[in-house]
Length: 263
Image (cartoon, rainbow, N blue to C red):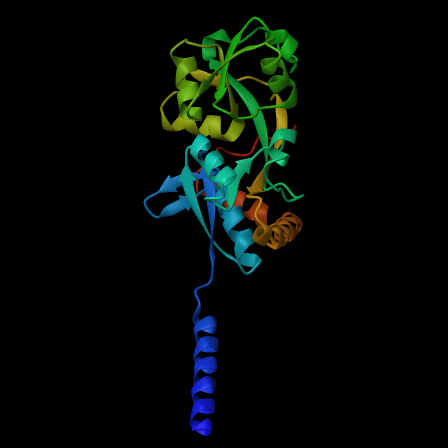
């Protein structure tokens, strides 16, 4: 009897170990805001420069992840509640750093620009918002644009409405409801090309700001090591050219505007 019981316990222990080994690998859920050509929803899943960089960083860290494209407000709320593990792309701020954890390495660096009707560009723009205080603006709801711009909106020095998407913001400019849409440069160029607005809308030069985009992680104890691993891979991808290669591939396939010519 004793021998039989020992075999039974051994069998149970072996079975539990086997079940542990067979436990499915965790899949990390990344929410991404629709931002072509950086993040795009397709019938085959999320794609785009930032979506692909995030996927490769997780893969290089030996982690499984899936990117789900959601409206910004829903993705932000899901990250706050912990319903998703990460959000892309996100701009760091003191308010957001109090809620989420961020890697040190940005996932992408984006030019933040203003788009206007082609026939209504100001005669002179030095890149300073003081030149544009008499105009009206629109930005993505809940989004940050550039430090000076965001501060001016909060202080009431700029009149800025909000839109549910970057496409909606650009259509407000096309309809004459506001003068300028504050949109990431590549996204704005992609949207006006896709919607046939290329002859009616144009980008104002110079850009407002080069904004660093980040992966924001939900503040969960089990994600601390994940953030560190992804941070390391993002640094390596920036150093070894893997991140740039992803962007170059999209340009070759004409899924994003050509790179600006160097002076």
